[in-house]
Image (cartoon, rainbow, N blue to C red; front, side, top):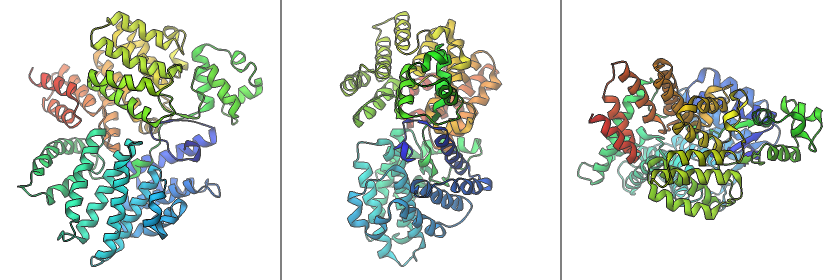
Length: 555
């Protein structure tokens, strides 16, 4: 998928320099759309459009979609964007324009195509007169088929979490325009889809079109309806959320669905090879021996040429990296493995050790345990469980974590931060080690920070938000411990701002609490911030954090 320029969600891309430059251009456009920067985004889109090769319909579709989104953000009506969306549809889904009912069942769509399809339907419905109820009902039927498919598909839950709220929101806007009397039962279905969208958002800690869906549900849910209580619970969280958005001067209303086009962190192959080689203390000659010439090695590391498949795979294997252009945190040939691993991390983060043990058992059956990365990921989670349940001491835990790191890095304590490249599994292991090894904490923390490529700070944080926010949140907390409250607060503000723009709740409570803790040390803290943290944790069903913030409120 990544090689076809279709963004790969939760996977890494290792790219040739030309591919990386195109990736950077795309992500810069998405970042500006998310920030509602209409002043320069149209110039960037035009610049990217000139680089599109003949026949590259995926990039062409991206250009058409972003032009339409820039127009809407700039104040144009959805129906004005219909020609652009129709042209975008023809790039890969022209058959759905001519015969949706027969073709949709067999259509294999990626997440971005679902987004383009939904936006096309929205713009077409917006172009209809209010008395065109029959045509509008056909568009609603299409949206219902999309909602049914993505909610029934167990293979890609994040696609469901991202697309379902968008489609549910569009559905409600069409119902609002054409079927307020509810003679066809559309209002009831729109309400049902709205509540289901809220459930998906809660499960995946995202808030796409949260205000829009909440506003609609409040209008169409009667006071005597039992769902009004559920609506009230979501509204309590919304009030907290609205205050935070106002505090950061970000519009809580969603102006764009461009978040769907955010790609996961990409890396230039040559840069990774150079950083990893220096980190492991391998000379250029040792690395290239039997693989390529000195001249080729020089050009690869200085990003002056592309790299052949054979050379890439051999060099990555020698550097103890996964020799795949596109890969996830774990390596597996079954889609179920990635979902189970997500549940492992979720249970670990929430302190649900019964669920953690259960999912670890299942994960072991789904992945190849002779792969070093898989062994590191699985064993790290298992050691967390053993430590939490008291079966191993902190000393034994640290020893086990160091042993896991040694699978790919011989001497983590002697590693130079100036030339560090850690993969995701190594990052998590070093992080866990730094928590308990206070003597070497700053050294390990420097390794983590050095891992993040800072050349495009905003793009790096946006495209790899969860991991980078995880590292920066930890760094901000440590700066607070060192009484560097100003620097600590700036980092927390930076993470919070990006999270709010991406509608991603991960680490929101952590960074609000970090700022509260800093203010507490300086004698100007407000307990209302603890209440915000508590409401966020309740919405996310994070019981461990709920207990923590409740205890802090009761102090």
